[in-house]
Image 1 (cartoon, rainbow, N blue to C red):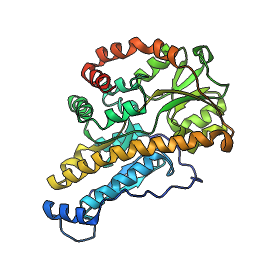
Image 2: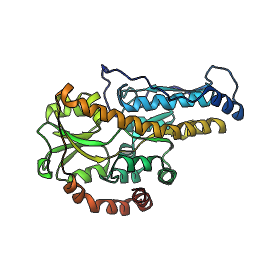
Image 3: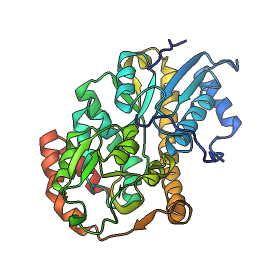
Length: 352
């Protein structure tokens, strides 16, 4: 049994939204039984190892749905000998602090954006450059692409931070929301205090777009908006609505500037304590989780966009993003050269 200890980005809030029941996420029992025989699992229903996974979002968020899918796949593929316990709502800390606990061996797994993980793997900053992906389909092709994921693994291996990647998912496309009015042009955000994630590239992106970047944890955004510490932020519709940011920032502009990559990380200490068969279970569950995760995030965000105005009074607007794209065009190659991520950028472009 792995040791337990207390250790992304939100302060826990009461979740008043219904958490939909996942349907069709489990394979047939016969498949699980066959795999159990091949891998030599016993048929004792008692979990032999319990792995803890932390994330920073509420239980109605796609992070929770995706974590539950991953946990069920691990349970099924191991015939119940591995159990994943999920700790949502930043109960174990911010994304950055949870990753530190993963590295130290006090936490088995955590779910983090690559932006926040860039504190440990600076080359992940490449994925913070806006408009890398032309649309959701382009992003999905990349997220499910073996070469793209191998490139991510190579960046981790080169840095040797003390963790590995076991799954690639997303919280959904990020757009701008604020306290002052609809964003229809670059001039509308000029000089505004923009909350950014803890990544130098994030600050560079928003500085180049004319804002004043302010790096604060996601859990501080609500009060930051109330106090004027920040005037604008950017995130997915799910993160915006489920954390009730519409209460303090009722303007949501569909810049869709970033399709963020989030990863489930496992600490090397935990990984080394698993058998070869257990490792295969974790990796297979992770591969299965990727497709579910991107579809769940996309469908959930689309549903929320439809009800933002009617249910929450949000003023949603679309805009011409061409000036934003043009303003940041040179930053992609520039950042790739600085971070040594030319191959990753090339693969992303090949998948368009």
